[in-house]
Amino acid sequence: MEMITSGTIKTLNKKLNTLTLTNNSLIYYEITNLKINDKVRLFVFWISNNKALGFKTFKELQLFCSLKPYNLWPSLNDLHQIISFKNESSTIIDFICSNKPTKLASILQISSSDASKIINELKEEYLASNNEFFVC
Image (tube, rainbow, N blue to C red; front, side, top):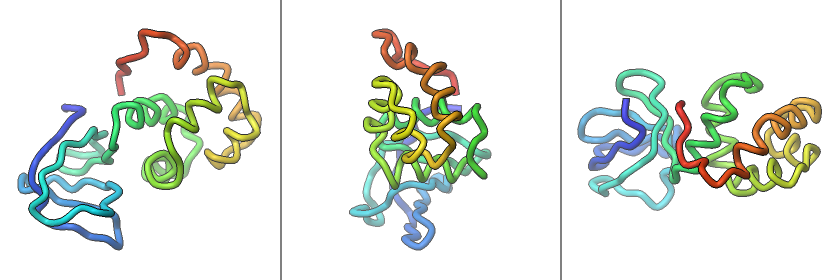
């Protein structure tokens, strides 16, 4: 499925942080400042045929896809919230690149040993100049 979706917002659910597009795709996304009938273009990770986790930037989606295989969070939604709602993806990436396992552990809500493993495995990936595409 595509990593980018766009459309017009049909409904918003502020309690669940979801929006529905006119094509009936339900997307979990930070909906602050959005209104019904707004046109949006989002980076998405599809969790089923018509449900997705939405990201503001490709870097957020890239980070999500890099961290997802570690299975350190109770659900994909928990990881999505950590990256998209609670923190800046650039801060998380900075902690990976600058080798700060304690700070990374705190922000990702994981153990220091898991944070060290993530840093060891992903640091070069994020420091590389050709890290523009990840398969999710």
